[in-house]
Amino acid sequence: MMSILVKWLTVANYGETEIHQILSNPRMIRNPKKIKACIKNAKIFKEIVSEHGSFDRYVKSFEPCDSFENLMLFKEEIEYKFAFLGGITVYHFMMDIGLPVMKPDRVITRIFKRLELIENEKQYLKTVIQGRKFSHATGHPIRYIDIIFVKYGQKGEEKYFGLMDGICLEKNPKCMLCGVKKYCGYADNSR
Image (cartoon, rainbow, N blue to C red; front, side, top):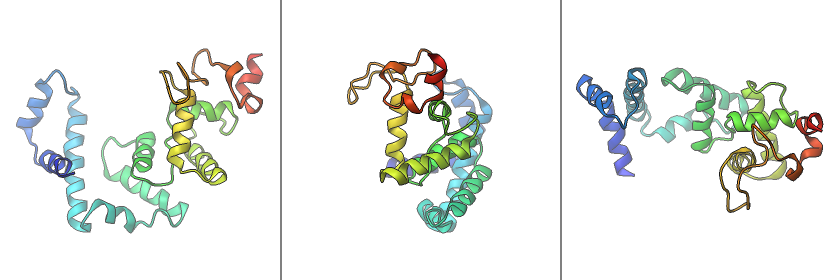
């Protein structure tokens, strides 16, 4: 844990010399805007920790688990405060820190659109709401729901599920293997 703490504190103090070193390293990202955003975000993180005592206290100050409104206010705040934290990434970050939202990435939105839970793959908020409904209906944490859907729709071997690839793939989905095809608008149209 201490090494992580030291890293963001170190990054918060980076200047032009370190930026030049990063840009010169072929193994690093070569986008100056993203590099500067990382440094800016480390500085903002440092300010938040200084003001609130910890990032956890900052998050809890919004009482994001008390209401959906508070959760969305927190989302709006960090999306505004931090650079390069766009619509999908902000939800992913929120899910990773344990908040009850599902990241509306391309795999999740593709599956939800095919299941006719959303009309358009750009409906991020509606995707989050549908993910929360799955979590509530099953009693499983939203992170678990996310993992199941991602494994269902993502390429790559998954030993736990016995899959060489997912089922609801972008190209050539395996509708004949799908356990929810009777609910799927895509499977109906592909017959």
